[in-house]
Length: 145
Image 1 (cartoon, rainbow, N blue to C red):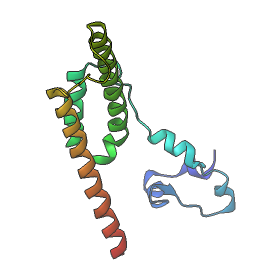
Image 2: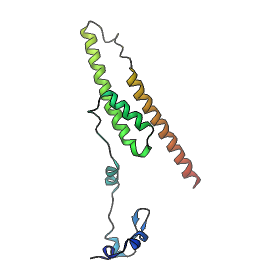
Image 3: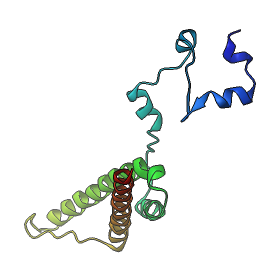
Image 4: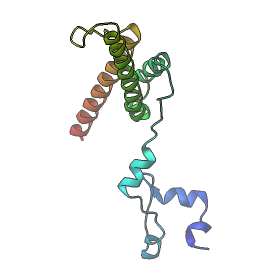
């Protein structure tokens, strides 16, 4: 058993600073886990696959993300936007095909946004505004230090 395994929780707590163990000896240096930036980013990436959700479910999720903690939902917002854009584009292509099949032309095709689409993009816009405000506040706090 090494020294770290024999320590009490109190001693272990003293040897952790900013979430990382402190290194007191050269022997301990070899026992400290190395976290590469890429591994850390992958561990932080909690994206979800929203492609199975319907339009209304995507809207409800986006609206819930708009008011949630920025850091918690940031990657989810990107994923949900991709899923919604794919769904929207599929609907648009299907509507265009139907329009052309019924004798219309691509030039006179107008695929207006429905209420769900407007709600979705309003939620994304709200999230983006909150994120920009959050980042601006962080920059102000860093410049004060």
